[in-house]
Image (cartoon, rainbow, N blue to C red; front, side, top):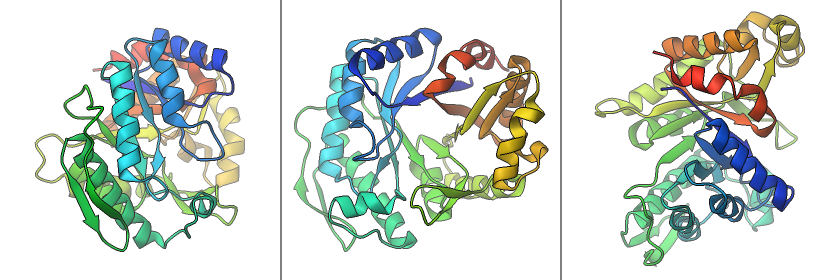
Length: 307
């Protein structure tokens, strides 16, 4: 089944609660909160508030920065959210890319290899804590001493884990260990510290998926593949709507419309694209921004019914 989740962040209490209710009523699989300390609302506080106004929609961070989050605090946040939501919490985590977030907590951003090592260490420690284990880690990348999450314990036996990345090493690790691999097709961070090169050409997507497949070799059930959609436009002129974005990132319109990272066209065309992405790439999950909530609502039941 193809599912859609909604990524958002609150700007006021009433609007956030209303958004959560609308997302649940529309059939979105999860409400996901971005995690950029200092730039958006604290995700787990926001999600706990959303939990009180909903009953079935999943709730999670998308994605927490392993570089600035500590396993004990992250595990406590996730377990508390799971408790308050009656077992609907999800954990999304990545290696992080924004230099300012490291500096804000008194750290310098490591090189790529250092960020990946820390991400893996943080993910493993956080999962172990959520599973009820005592955790001790003593490395240059992470220090945890005799940590145990005694209370609260999660309601779920195992919190679903999404690893968001485009890094080859982390894609392989996620293929071996994650429940969901979150694909954004984003490459090197640009000098502004926020924007990225894009890796949306077919060969680039195939290379990323090959890393996931290599990591998943031998698993009874490989991870699900999820695309973070950067632009949604419901229109009867997909080529015109895609032209500016395609030019900006150096793709042809056809190349852009063939990626799972944009959904542009009529409702029928978007459903057809979702079906094509599942056949070609194996993508069965999508994350879209809040502004797409209403525009995509009619697509959700049609996508879920795809066979």
